[in-house]
Length: 269
Image (cartoon, rainbow, N blue to C red; front, side, top):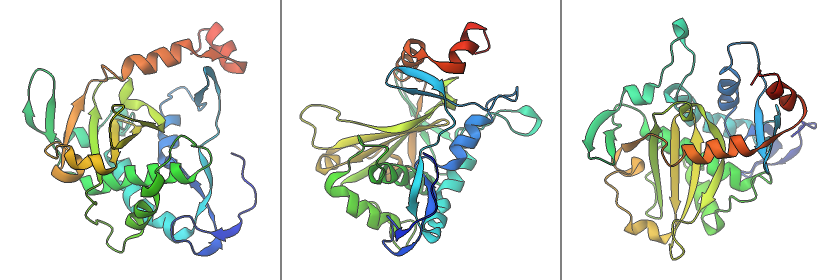
């Protein structure tokens, strides 16, 4: 979305009237990291919308928050950026600090559970919650609707204690994606209902190795907490076996247009 002059209006988080900042729905570091995936100087991002793929540098952002609230959310964005998958680092080495600091807790043929006590899981959980809340507020994410939980979540993000205990109706689950190239994918948050009779909703946030599931609603009380990141500081390792096919199908089936179509024909992408 193109920038217009900063308006003076109510901050979506603290409700104070002031000059608003240009606020990202996904954190700004996500876009910077996506651009840095390229080692050939190509800094063009590809967006897939309604089955059409094109080069698009447009980022999900709008005037939403005041300066103080931007700084508040940064308390959780910075640790997430430091712990997420980092394609290129010193000596051109890829790193995934969250995975490096995970310790195997339990496993079977289907699941690997890791203990995340060595990393700031509270910050990761609040980072994911802030993205879902921002998406709910934004007109650019109409499918994200927190309903009656939007206001309690706003108050939670604004709490004086930046590590408040999450209410019983809210859980944050975390999976560490350990399969290339899905460990370097970032996506607009999306909603889902687990089953037709479920009494809670799930909002997914996928960004650079972190796949968060935010569970919201009264049915959350029936969910186990032993592998819930926000309750037990544990996560699952995920090889993208159910995530990967959907992303690949989306990418392969999208009709390229404009310069992207030309680059595909010339074998550049």
